Length: 267
Figure 1 (tube, rainbow, N blue to C red):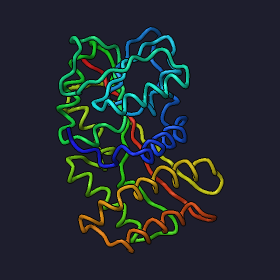
Figure 2 (figure 1 turned 90 degrees about the vertical axis):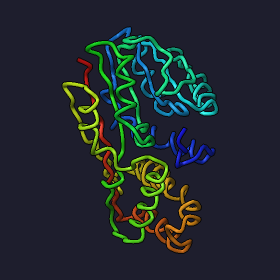
Figure 3 (figure 1 turned 90 degrees about the horizontal axis):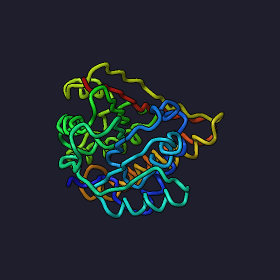
């Protein structure tokens, strides 16, 4: 298993939930499948997305899998706390799926492909357990889409450290822009990819707090020690970069980031 670049700390769990909650309407207004579907959620992690998509599809059954038992325990706790009863959690590896061919009506995954070195292989294996004419929905971010005001070269360097660390772990922090070709190479048809831009300014305090501060800047802060230890950046530099990112969340600052949501159909 590849190392998860962000780690499994309580800080990271909080960050993932902040991200999911703040972006729920933007990313999931259309995460609705036909009634009585059986849906595989691949790489559910701590259940940050599960708690959003499962209640929107109460008549459907979700099978939410992850390779990490620790993450699955957290996901189960979140589901129980939110009284979500239409999800079955199971430990599984997407490269060794324990399901019959063409078992699922639909598949959903978010922020998974960015962490693996062979996303096309993963998509092909997932397609095997998807019914004909079933859909796969993929959400990924793209760090290369980040821009902000006030501008800061040192903040950009701090962000690039995260991109480089993920690359060293076999992942791709700029994978969002590649969803269409990845789905196409994996044999899906009728592919549609829609950009979901987060634009944050003073008029949206929920996104200032939930996304700029608690999701994105918190992510860069979370990789700072490793970036310093690998000589990607100096301690004072990354501290300045994080301070500059925080400055974009203050009065008069703006922050932009684009997620991509791709949907493909199995022919």
